Image 1 (cartoon, rainbow, N blue to C red):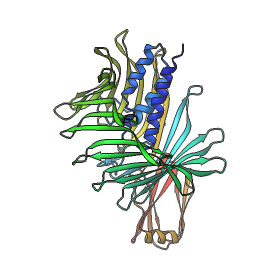
Image 2: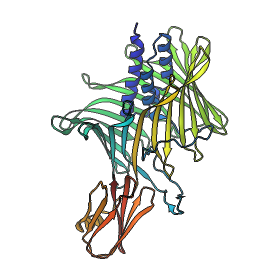
Image 3: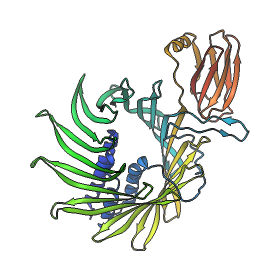
Image 4: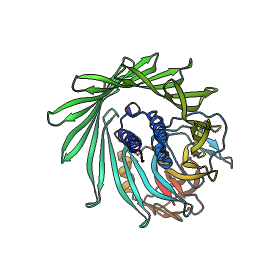
Length: 507
């Protein structure tokens, strides 16, 4: 018989955590903790149900976006993902620079911003990657994110279809103050307001309140939920409470809260509670206890749930962290069975010589054979500035004893170049710079109606000068780019009086 409860538990866990993350809730780990997953996973196995593909996709979406930067036990070569060209998850990124094979110094220092992200799924029928979604970012002159768009790719018509858009606003002090979310209205082909988040901070600059509101009509927003945070004297969050809006009585009703305990700047316990409206009391739900070694590294995390009948905590799951030479190498999940712990799943982490992750291996423990079985692996590749440019997910095919491609994520990045002051920007605009086509395939045409002498350089994202032209009069200049690899480049204009930059994409 199909175990509906397992499916419901898994779906609810995934959906709740997903919406929690989309709401920018920094306490999703407490509300919907990752270590709850092995418990659901093991319960489903006991009921005789094992939907392998379903489990794997949940692992991807729950664990992968929040994996920490971890150390590895052995050296592995960079992954073979040459078909993907650029990916960045961590920025700003600083690097002292490298020397390429020709002896030229490349500049990798500075800040890199995420331009766009592309998502691919694997088509086994024709052994190719299928582009199905893209995400795109925009920034202000300080490099702060001001908008983000999510688009679907129509393969048959070879066009992008708008899906959702998020816009960000900041206070005069530079703090994030508002996030607006829009959904695409296919009928009107415009962005319709959906909801917004408002942020308030303490005088110390710590987040105090996150208010979520739904869009009702023009200039009318209706309260939905809010999160309030309290801190100790040194900035440790000791209480986070979520409330829902009662539209009938026009008041906030408390729903959940998390109480954190700290010792010597280490979070030692986190208790999750639910508000009981009948008794007006907070009822325990779960508790996480954290243990550390002498160096302050977390070695163990134990999850227990509150048993009302016996009035005490009952163990559920445990995560153990193993280190080698000071680096975390294994993350091991175990579940509690009456009076002992049993292995469930684990992650193995590997780094290259530069300290970057190249492989994260997910394994499942088979109690019958007391062996670990490979199940899924995440592969990473880097550019010459040690910036992550490629990720690949692969599923273990036990019958064929091979890794099957599953998904790819591709990000294009750019070095952060502050915009020119308004006076210069206006001046340059009046000078009518024309650059076409953009994106370019074979040649880049540049027309700059300015009598000044300019040096124009075509530079890649690592800072390497690919081509250079000197302009001495009002003329049209041409860069032949047929010998350059696809990607994002920059045209740097330099004269005796000013410098400015324009971005261009080469396909």
